[in-house]
Length: 111
Length: 118
Image (cartoon, rainbow over all chains, first blue to last red; front, side, top):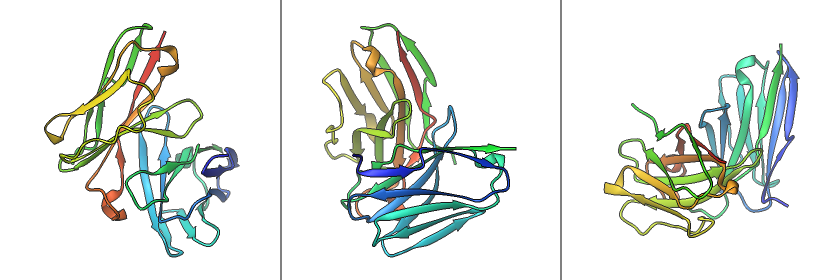
C-alpha cells in the first residue's frame, strides 16, 4: 500500500456543493502540502500545514492537519467550476527535503 | 516575478533517441527537484540539487537518466536511449532553501514537459 493515501481517487460534485478530500499518512507528519494541478499545467501550491493541528484557509478552500490521525483534509465550500482539477498532497515525514506524494484526487464540478 | 519554466512543453521522440529537458528555476532558489508523473500516478522523485552540494540521485530509475545544474541555476535532465516506459510528464520544482524549514521549503513547480516515446 502507498505511504500516502488520498481519498477519494475521483469526485464528481454538483456546482455549489461542499466536498472533502483526505490525505492519510502511514508515517508521522511533520508538514503537509496541498497542490492543485490542471491538465497541461504544473502543480499550483495551495497551502502548507505544519505539525500541530494546524488549519488554514484560502478563499473557499480550508485544510486541516490532524496529527493524531496522521491525516489532512481539504474542504471546499460552495464549489465552483474553477475548483475542478487534480488535488495532490505531499508529506514531509522525515524532516528533510524529500516529500512523499499521494496519487491525487480528480475533482469534476458539474454545472 | 517569473515562476519556474520548463522547455520544451511537449517532446515526441523515437525509441532509442536521447532527449534533453530543461528547467529554469525561480531566481534565488537554491534547491531544485526533478519529478516524473505517469498517468494517474503521484509524483516520482528523480533527483535533487541543493546549492553546491552533491546532488541526491537516489530516485533516478536507471543509468540512462542523468541531470546537471549549471551555475546553481538552470538544470538539464537527459534521458539516453529512450524507452517507451519513459513516456511521462517530467516536472521540475524549486524552493528557496532546504532543510527543516517548511516555509522556505515550499516547492514551486514548472508546467512540465510531456515526453512521448514512440
